[in-house]
Amino acid sequence: MKPTFHHRSINDPFDDPCVYVRVLREKRALLFDLGYTNRLKPNDIQKITDVFVTHTHIDHFIGFDSLLRALLRRETPLRIFGPSNITECIEGKLRGYTWNLIKEYPLKIEVFGINENHISHVGFYAENCFNRTDYGEKPFDGTLLKEEYLEVKAARLTHQIPCLCFSLKEDFHINIDKAALNRLALPVGPWLSEFKRAVRENATDNTEFKISGRIYTKKELIEIAMITEGQKISYVVDSSIDEENIRKIITLVKDSDTLYCEAYFLEEDRERAIERHHLTAKTAGMIAREAGVKNLVVMHFSPKYRECPDAPEKEAIMEYNRE
Ligand SMILES: [Zn+2]
Ligand SMILES: [Zn+2]
Image (cartoon, rainbow, N blue to C red; front, side, top):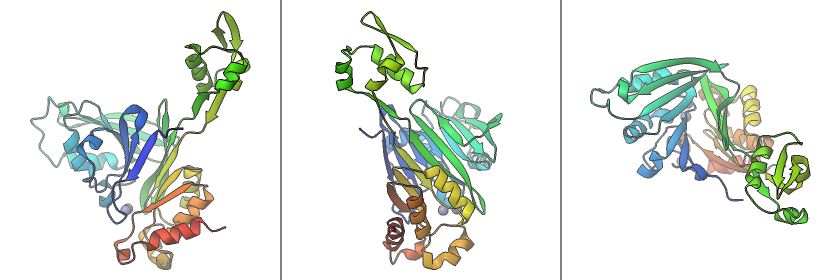
């Protein structure tokens, strides 16, 4: 199965974090955090439709200005998701510039601020000199985006302030089993897309399909559908090292193909991790193991480990591999 997402951390683990995800089938990209973004090529930036910001500490949000600069003339709107104060933070950044000559620019920024139970929606449009338009709130049930092929969920953690973590999940794939098709002596044809849609939408078993003049039910045809799970990628940084956070993270990142996780401190500096509201490398490894993650990528290391840059990964992987 060809992967749908190409994902990478664009920086080294001591830089301000930023993970870029290309959604190959849609020619678009998503971004987790707005840290140091200068390594992104102009072409990569133009593809970004949605940005997921964990919190607005400067190391996770400083890239906003470069993104704005690059996208000012873009037709496609930009959506930004973050904790509830993101609206004020973006408004403050936008107010830092003068916008009298941009009324013919197309850019629309839609900002979604997440609190305990609600998502607020505020628009900032170039045509309106980036003055805010409030669209009110809707209930938040953990899902930020739900589209035909993908879904993004978030959990709210504490990092002295609220901090979000995210998971991106591709919908399952439906392939047609050619051998089963031959067994049933069925021809290929447009009915297959209808059938796939019915499976995806979980239509009732007696849904009918007309094939070469005969009627078949979904139940009769179901053996030709081969279902494979989609890709799952998760992103977790800046979480206080407490049981409730760890439980929420494990639930959110369960069975991820790849987990990007902070390893800010080593276990020997656990006291410091508690004080600074960060995870340790060992905890990152434990979370990945408990959640059945297939591939753990540790990132966002404290500058104090510059002298031993391999230590955080080593500690995390050792814990991850523990029986
Ligand atoms: Zn932080
Ligand atoms: Zn940070």
